[in-house]
Image (cartoon, rainbow, N blue to C red):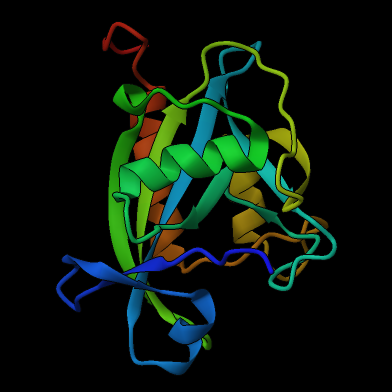
Length: 192
């Protein structure tokens, strides 16, 4: 039998605890877990901001065949949100993130029908072109989407042709605000 990861437990105030539970326990117990989300972005050929989107595998239990965050996953008992972000990027798409370049954006608390979690959201600028590999079977495809197209996907939930994993409007509002802010600056920190 494959070893199941122990997801780190969090207190209601967001403080990480030194205890973990297998994911199925979070569905039965009144416990809070945590996850790390990384939205990878780059400047496209015309200078426009593009965001890397992953297509969740068709056999995934949750949101199969939906476009989602560049890379994301739950925080294990022995790691921080930053460490989880780095690990998940490597596991899912063979992306070796430089932790010094990960930019923390926000944390929110989400309650689903399965469990409750704190979501730590980061952005990461892709500077070099890499060949991605789908290491753990969770991802079927990756594609770069312009920020304006992503906004359209999010805003047109009724008639869109692309299926996207839903997140609350405030989640995307904060994400888009940060992406626009960093996109307006060059690598030297000056306005573009």
